[in-house]
Length: 352
Image: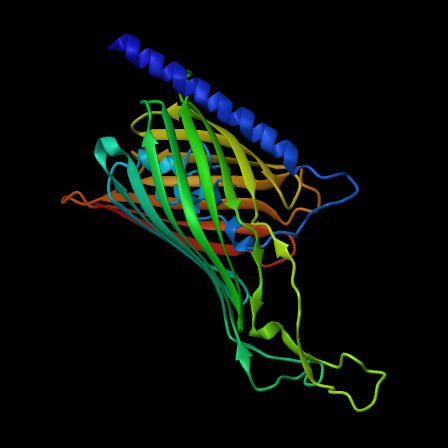
């Protein structure tokens, strides 16, 4: 039995290394020439917004640590390490007039693995419709909504190696126009033989391109402006391009420098390679006190990224379990931005 287990661990390590190799090959395809940069060229950019106060406060260095319902965003293999039924909520007043919300549900199924459902929503307030002829407003209003609904599955192949995937439907709408598509995320986490060291790899948002379509693309045009007597109000239609989802590869490592019942200190670092920006590094640290009752966190986003927007992150969380076995986790995270107002976010999780 021991030999079989050892053999399975070696196979798991090989699968993990192959995943890293494939991810590295994929990253090479992401690269563009130095003269041409693809910043801001992807659709559904809301899929890049971090989920949960823990991952946010750690500066986004979370791919090898994720082990709660927010893992369906960071690394879906992490839900295989969720031991109880979990209901997760995340809320943030993202930017002025824009609100971000995430709901995740995970159910462990013993030897079968774990399944999860997640909903991500970015919504705006109502804004006035303005035109060239009526720059002060037409009296009409509009709003925009971006939603992703996903279903995830993950399993522990061995006591060290987890793998998982998240399949999602994406929809973005503004006034009477909409773009839809599908994407999936895949990831692995490997507990190395070295004490307290974990490796994680994930590839997120690989799927179909999105193209905006709808009644708002209908316009009235004069197809022969130099001729008299023709119909000056022919209905035409604007032709829009399609754009890929924000494909992101994350590779990370974390280390439990201290791991005692009374306190724990974890360091983490992630390398990011998106298809619509240059590579960057996220770093973070987490210190758990009083048997994880209080957790302090800090990190830094987008190291070595030219013209970066993000920076320092801070946060704290509390964990509590009632006498009936119901667990509660709540927390706060602060995200500093270079040119915009700082972002405050809150999340909590119920386990039963």
